[in-house]
Image (cartoon, rainbow, N blue to C red; front, top):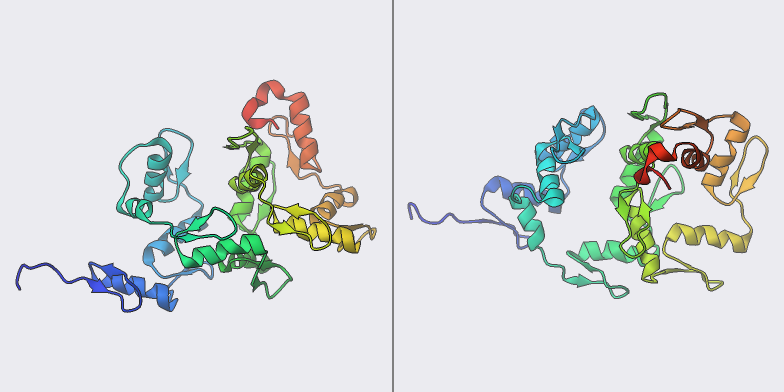
Length: 310
């Protein structure tokens, strides 16, 4: 019938229905895994052109869209729009934002109170309880709970360190943008994420999540030999070494061995003399971040303010 309602384009695999054929075609890639849009700079590929455009902006590191309420900036206008709505209540939620809020959590975890939107999300969540990490790096022994985490890790083996610290006189470079963000917080000691139970503050959201689990007493990772339990699987892995006596991280200069990798990293400056942490106020160099923070607390308390002190 001319002028009648348009017939929707329905997926034959799931219940998805789109208004346009190209929407259905894009959706079908979620079933086939096809990613025809490829980045010209790295190996990234995407199922949609919009995701590729967003990814490409991470190579330029240009954040042209700035919030007029706070210091936040974004690489895309849509990301800024969502930030302003979520953080400041400005504007109206876009269609994508509305759809997210209408989703129903219907897959409950049998161990804790978590409820997932999808069955796949539940399977991924359960690994936080079991410690299962089925995705293993082919170049080292590191394994991960999700495929995306493995893909992110794989960048470190390529040898390219494209992300450089923006602070003057700091020569820190790394392979991952997330590592750069964490590093730059060492210059300011800014801790934006606060626990509602004890008011302790954290620099990154993931640290806050782990901390909150201690309040609710949720320690899913348990030692099979003693009564030790932890909120993190990596802490349990380190604990198990106390039973075996193993010290896997050995200094290649003096042969001193350590239980943890970061203990070895902290030890190395005693040989190299490297001091990669610099005070943001007087640029005094330090080999260890803890010594830099003690220096800021002692020498620059009046300048730092509560947001930059431990």
